[in-house]
Image (tube, rainbow, N blue to C red; front, side, top):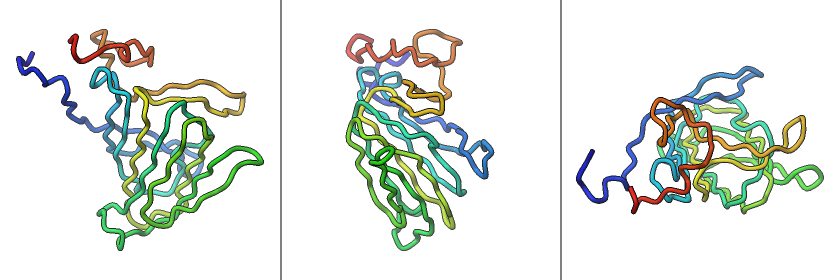
Length: 183
């Protein structure tokens, strides 16, 4: 245990691997790194991911909405816009309200709280795309339009529970009520 007063305000990244739908199959991709919000820095109301998309495929198949604002950042893997070589499509809205937006260069897309969005489909990836979703809430989740109906889903990644040693996170959200001052 560190005796440094502010050490608990620092989160050191560990690589994570996730699945992506490619040609109808679930494929493990990565590494990616995430700041998972309030479970990693108590009291945080923000979570963000950083990763490269290196193959065509669907990142998030089902439309969903969050109770908080989200920003989706797309850049070339080198962060030099001249190196962009990909084509993706993001649906914003749902049903008759849905509009498909082409991601054909570096950009940031703002998704206000309560706005349906996705799927996010990388149709072609000729060079790695740096993808950064940033959501202003302590844990990733929202309302998803699944084939069986709308459902609230929360995902905190393949991480260990910070409250119970030896347990994987099950998104109980109890860690979100913690504050860094009381640790």
